[in-house]
Length: 89
Image 1 (cartoon, rainbow, N blue to C red):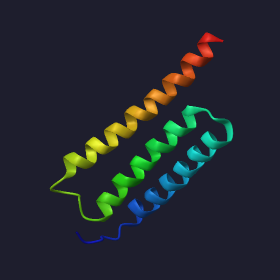
Image 2: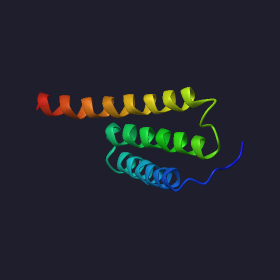
Image 3: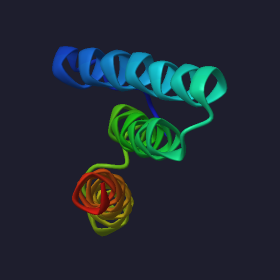
Image 4: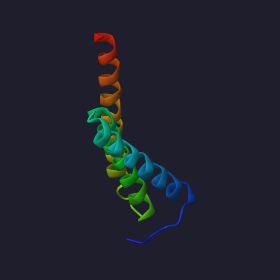
């Protein structure tokens, strides 16, 4: 496991970490689970970028894809929750 410096993945990991913090802050401030889900999803995206930076690019690319797939499902679930809340009102 060797660290490979790739500016795009470093920037993406930092942005995802920031968005994760905002999601967790939104949950603690308002108690709404949507920001929490979004924060968790962006934390998973951050984890996948770190995996790529650590060299898990070629042999375990399927694992990185599955990690990102889980994050996308969480984001879709959070969006669905927001959409259905607005419809019910």
